[in-house]
Length: 554
Figure 1: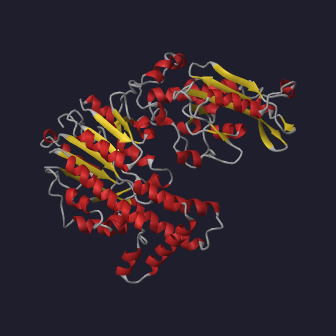
Figure 2: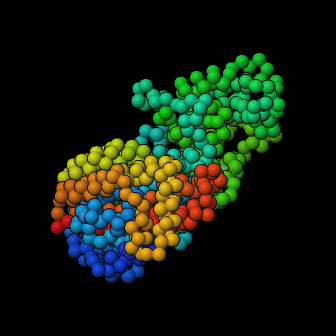
Figure 3: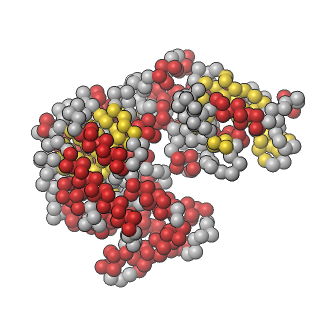
C-alpha cells in the first residue's frame, strides 16, 4: 500500500481497534490461538507488547507495505468469542480464510451507548500532539464564525468531520430524554423535493407554568447566518399559573391579544423544518416536548461540549462566555430566545469548524480515517447505512449507501475489483439487528436470564459450555450461516495481496443494555433482581470479548 499511514508508532496516528482482553471468555480463545496461527498473514513483528491493534497493523511494516494492494475492513458487530467458539462449524469460512482470531476487549462505553462508539473507533484516528505544540486551529473570533457559513454547508472538504457527525444517535436521543413516536406527538416530514428548505436551524423556546405543567409561550428559529426565520408568541391552552418571567422573559402584557395556538405554531414549524433538517439547540428535548414535535436530527450543544460524567450539563451562558467571549442571559429580564438560539448556532458552528475535540484538553485531536488515507494518495470506498456515510466520509470518498447485508456484499465485491480503490469499509449487521430484536422480547429475555443462571450454577463444565450462550434458534443459525457464506464470497472475490481485516467490536450488547434499563427503572417485569444482576454480569463479561481476524490473500 506504499504510503499507508503507520497507525502504531507512539506519537503518531492511532486507530484504536480494540484493547487487550482478559477474563474467562478470553482465556478460551487464547488457548485456541496458541495452537494455531494464520498461515496466510505476512511476516509480523513479535506478538509481545504494543497492543492487539498494533500487532494486526504491523503488516504495514516497511517490508510488507509495498506488497499489500488493498485493505478491506469488514465489521460484524455482535459476534463475540463465546458465540464464535460454540458455532465454529457454522462459521468455518472465518477460520479457513483468516485463521484463529485474536480476542479483544470491547470498548467499555459500548455498554452504555451504542454501536456508533465502535464504528467511531474504527473510522477515526487520533493524532497525538507533541508537548508544547500550538493548536493549529485556534479559536476564531465571533466574526469569523459567521463568515462564509454557506461555504460550510455547501463544501465539506475543509471540515474535520461532516456536519452529520455531530448529530445525536438514536441511543443518545433516548438517553437524554428525547421522545420518539409517542401518542399526541407529531413528527417532522420528509421534504417533498428531497432537499430541505433549511439544512440547519437553531431552535429555542420559552415556556410558562399552567395548570397542566409547562406550556409553550414563544418559539424562535434562526438560520445559519443568524437571521431569524420564525419568532412568535403563543397563547397556552390552559390557565397560566406562572409566566416564569425570570427565565422565560415572558410577561402577561406580552401575551395580551395573542391568539396563536400550539397547533398554529406546529403548522408553521413543519413548513420550515423537514425530516432532513438538522436542529441545533441547548437541551432541545425540552423545546421539542413543549412543541409536541418529534425530530431525529439534533445537534445538542449541552452534549456536544463534554461535561463531567455523572455531572450536570454545562449551562449555555457558561459555554457562551468560555468559547464565544459573549455574555448572555445577563439583562435581568429573563432569557431572550433569539439570543439563545444564535448562541447555540455559533457554538455548534465553532465545534464543526474545529472538530469534535475542540474545547477538550489538547493532548489529541481526531481525524477521519479516510481523510488520512486520501492525504497519502489512497482512494477509499465506504459501504454502509446512509447515516454512517454522512458521519465518516469526505468529498473524495466513494460513498455507497446500502440497506442489507446482501447489498453490502455485492457492492463490496464490485469495489474490490476496482483497481483504483485502496481501502474499503463495510458492515454485516444482520446479527446485531437480531440481538436488538430479541432484547425487546420480554419472554425471551426472562428465558435467557434463566439460562445464564443455570450455566452459572451447573457443576459440569461440559453442561455449562452447552448452555452458556443459550439455545440457538433456527433464525440465528440462518444468520450465522449467511455471514459465513458472505465472508466466503467476499474472500473469493479478493485480488491477490489484499489484506482482509474482520472486526466484531462486541457481542450481544443489546441484552446488556436492556437489562440495565430494566434494573434502573425497577421494572415489575423483573421477578428476581438478584438473579438478573448475576446474569447481567455474566452477559456483559461474555459480550466484552470481541474478535479480530486478519489475513492477506495469496
